[in-house]
Length: 120
Length: 137
Length: 308
Ligand SMILES: Nc1ncnc2c1ncn2[C@@H]1O[C@H](COP(=O)(O)OP(=O)(O)O)[C@@H](O)[C@H]1O
Ligand SMILES: [Mg+2]
Image 1 (spheres, chains in turn red, brown, blue):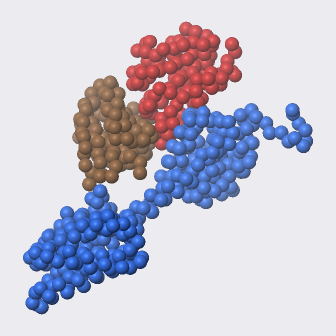
Image 2 (cartoon, chains in turn red, orange, brown):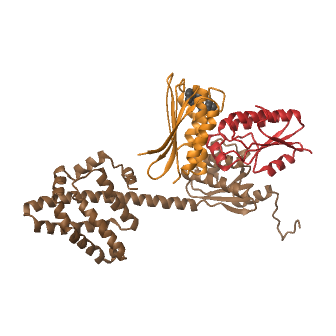
Image 3 (cartoon, protein in one colour):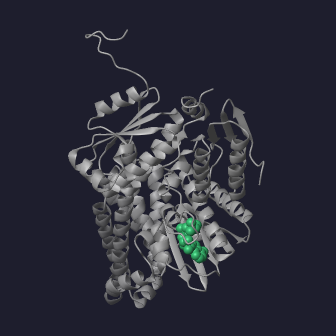
């Protein structure tokens, strides 16, 4: 699935904001879209806004984490922003702490976090 | 004694059913005023177990129930499939073990999230998993 | 509502049968009680009056029945209660009904000693009336049946009183727990959660949930969790602290763990915790300083001069 999620480019950062229910297909589509966008552009950072998700199971969480890893191989750093308290609690209780992913409280902080490392 | 207040049976056949089933679970949890953490817990566990039925057993069904003990409300989900059964239940429940190169946290994680968790499985016959999540005190 | 106590007390058919045997409440007794129904109806009024005379005449019990309306109400309940003794049944429905008595008394704080005393008065008045009404043989047999069912009732009332009391205590503990886990805002976007007292798994979960909610609410960047007041940090507690730390990180904030004593340090290392990824300090003050420093703030000593 291509084109499932809107991807915005701000400077050299991609902004991914998913507003529809994160089914497996949407998550996989998001991964494809992000990697394709990285190929097309000179983006060096990705901010994925997940504040709209009320359920993230380990399968979807892994897709998010893997997307970040793949992006890193392609030279871009990723930040997940806006995770809800109940989502964080649930994932941690299931034993998935997403250790290799970076997080920020909100969009601004995510952009700021990348801003330090990404030249304009 | 636990009363069943309402009951819904849903088929699990295709990937889209994962979203349908967990949406229903969320809806029941919210209707029965489980707090956001308990709601996320049951919804996520349901999502995991629905996927397991689909991926590991090729399909099956789930019964979602609103339950009550006269004092509090809760949500119960009972998954049933006629797949191959869980080959090594102990390992599957320990967490981190998967036969399909995925996380292997679905079954053990659901157990940790639920207030009650039961699994019955028989090789070649199928698997039944039942979980409950209740309102906080 | 009272059905719940049946469960708490594990009062099922088996328990019912066993208790009836022990209190000698036989079917013959029940039949005799049923046959006494019209006697009971005739004397209800007098018996209930005598009962309340005792309760209202004693200062310590009188205070539970302060207003007239309430007294009228409980008298009516008491009449119903008394007559039910002569329903001639002793099944789970009967027990459930009896559970009310203990629970109601617990609610108003009337201790068992008072209603045990009141039961005695009951028996006294009933005996008087029985011997006035019936030949002594019959009166004696009737008295025996009534004594059996009344003692059976008392056992249930006491059980319920205890169960209801335990519930009240449980509720208080919960309230105390919630009070004992405050989250304090010590500075802009810096929170402090001083943990005090034992942490069991229920409280560990509450701590995590409460903290995560506050982090998002306050958009906090740092959370200082001070565990100096936790008497025992075993592997379970340590694990829950790590989970909380991990969850806070997933929100985009950081935990600074303070109040780490030598034994706690030992436990954490033995657990195989990756301490390199954690901010930890021995003392709370250092934790606050660290949070401020990480947030890009400085504390300067005016005496010694220093920046502006
Ligand atoms: N309904 C099922 N039928 C058969 N096997 C199952 C079922 N559910 C789980 N399993 C087995 O248990 C293992 C662990 O499941 P789980 O914890 O959900 O991890 P994962 O799905 O990532 O493999 C699976 O790899 C699979 O072998
Ligand atoms: Mg699974």
